[in-house]
Length: 140
Image 1 (cartoon, rainbow, N blue to C red):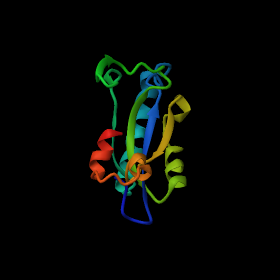
Image 2 (image 1 turned 30 degrees about the vertical axis):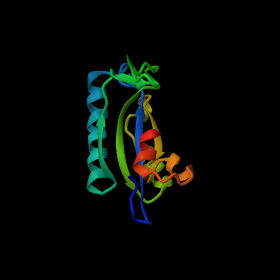
Image 3 (image 1 turned 90 degrees about the horizontal axis):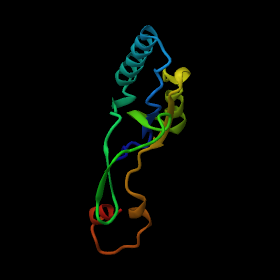
Image 4 (image 1 turned 120 degrees about the vertical axis):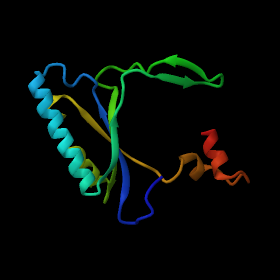
């Protein structure tokens, strides 16, 4: 849910490339991860980051009317999401600037910046149906 403050916005930073570290020495990995932790801790201390976590490689995908479950997701290593930060920033430009500080960018990580919306696009576009908004969101 987006912030009520007119002066701030919420964004997800999605980190892509599960194999960013494969060509690095253990010392280079340790140095980058130390820089990453310092970056994260600084953002938290400044009130810019509300949390974040690495994501595991495996998972399940639920899809379709039958709600079938399959192994996945199976994205290329460089496309796979390996973690996220939940940001509170003044605007999109600040969120992009924060993403540009990621210590693993020189090693192949890419950072996708996505705004967190206050509600689902279906709720904004749907004509009034008499259903509560939560019912509309559940169908999206």
